[in-house]
Image (tube, rainbow, N blue to C red; front, side):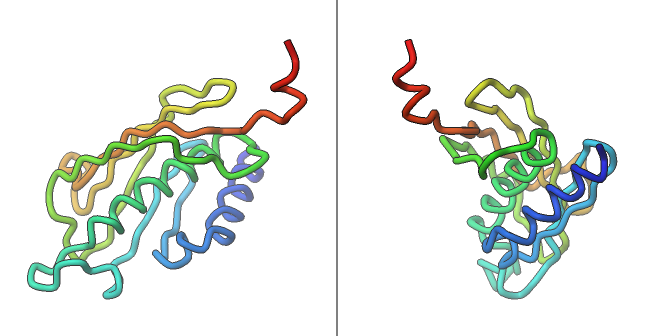
Length: 146
């Protein structure tokens, strides 16, 4: 089962263009995934600090949630984001950033996921995400069924 999860994770990391743009990677230990965002100059938003762009941090959190869903559940297609709330807690410095997602609930169609990102110490997160994701869209036949 672990090999199947690793294969799903690798496929997702290679096929989503924005994940490739970010340079995001991941490590898998059982069903727990740690996402890794190595620092790269093109990810900087504030050159005076320097700090990662807020959009990069937000995208990293969202992609972490999607990858964790892909590791946990065999998905027919990539989940669609319904809504996310991102809490920016401190500046994301020009360092490698890590994230872990906690899938709180997976229903028939919607998943609820929380993600935290940190740099040097996991106890000092730089940002957090709470999101809802649509796992599948019902086919026309399913909609018509009573």
